[in-house]
Image (cartoon, rainbow, N blue to C red):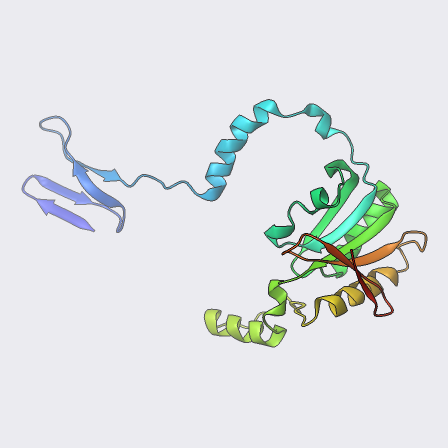
Length: 210
């Protein structure tokens, strides 16, 4: 964009100019740039600079988890270890959308149990999961329409229609992997986001509410 006035000729990138700021007499006017709006990441970095002043160096010790928990990335499960009465240092938390035991979850479980020493595996699905609200084909079609493209990955979104049935499937996938020791218990649960209570899901189809 070019701004031309008597004695003034400015070339300013489109969308960058908010107003002209006059300097001392005889000097050309200069454009004032828009102030940068802080993003959530910027705000987080600013907060970290302050909060880190009270950081406990003891938290930097090597991890020694007692249990590996696979659960959903839903923010409502962000403090699930507190609902279980577990200390943060006792839990190796593995999270993804839908509480899926996929290649990456298996990789993490193998390392957690074989390398870090986790002695049990807990799979926690939950009620009102967003993955219940669409099918894989519906999501693929929506993304094709929104982007005009059909990429090769992800191959699946792992949507499901029944939280209990999905939990049983994930138990089976984790339990059947040859690198996860048979000595490591694998148990599955559904967390009720309305009550905070867990219901245990057993491989044989039974579900017991706590």
